[in-house]
Length: 324
Ligand SMILES: Cc1cc2nc3c(=O)[nH]c(=O)nc-3n(C[C@H](O)[C@H](O)[C@H](O)COP(=O)(O)O)c2cc1C
Image 1 (cartoon, protein in one colour):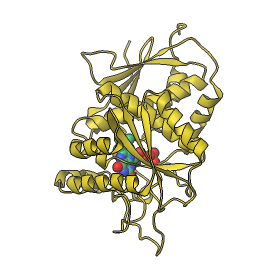
Image 2 (cartoon, rainbow, N blue to C red; image 1 turned 90 degrees about the vertical axis):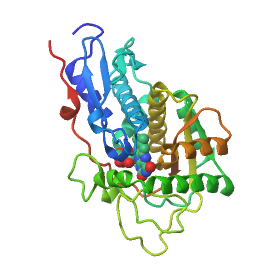
Image 3 (cartoon, rainbow, N blue to C red; image 1 turned 180 degrees about the vertical axis):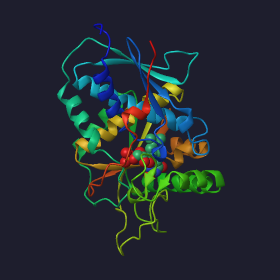
Image 4 (cartoon, rainbow, N blue to C red; image 1 turned 120 degrees about the vertical axis):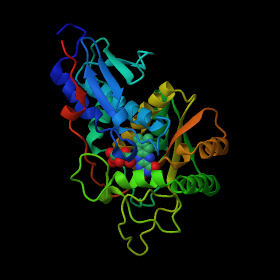
């Protein structure tokens, strides 16, 4: 091992953290490779979602989020890294290269965010009505800003209603595509024995007409009478100045930083990407927010009953071994 290389156990521990990242339908579209002087994060074309993600946006978000977990894991092991997006123009499957930076101890914030990795999960259930305090909101804005993204907190019934309407319209567009509907069904799992896909138990209660937001139908759990979604969720839109692959990868990092901050604050969240997946809806959302740049994810944030992390493929299944 040279001073700048990362040894096998350190690499493996970093991959174990990386795979806990979120991905569209839990498709886990990533692979990881250890080179003599770097770690590479690769997009896995075999695990893309052609109907839901024809442009590769969601692959980049997921790989960016995995890179952020990896960065944190390496930092707590006192092996901080620098990240370069798309380091080889001729090989766009390599989405990030992580190279060792000067060794230092992890900051208390890095340690807290790292500790939040195994506790974070999407929560599609109704949240409690308690509002998110101002200082917690400030930390969420800071988390996005630290990763070169912006976070718009959507407040007020009219503004939240406008975002919800855009999301419903996008959802109607998507549901008119039989291949989109088939893809969603194919990635929904009856239980949590599969190592990928969304288990029905994580899917949230079955949708009802009075719901503010369209929930993807991963589960068909009967809803108890009166168990409605919170009336005033904190809705946030994460965005980036541009929309190149490197912006989307940076958005994935920022998303994961925001999500881990949410967990660290004792809050919970679900993601809503229908308005991002339909180009016209995404532009409407941008206009509604009055922001420059590109919306990359909509989040519903609040306090709720803790759930369970969803399954993942193990490190051995996502590591490519470099010969020689
Ligand atoms: C790009 C992207 C888009 C997503 N879109 C949605 C969505 O529209 N609705 C939803 O319920 N979850 C969405 N998710 C969350 C994933 O379904 C979730 O991350 C995955 O199933 C793994 O579960 P976990 O977040 O509990 O670890 C999205 C995640 C990513 C990364």
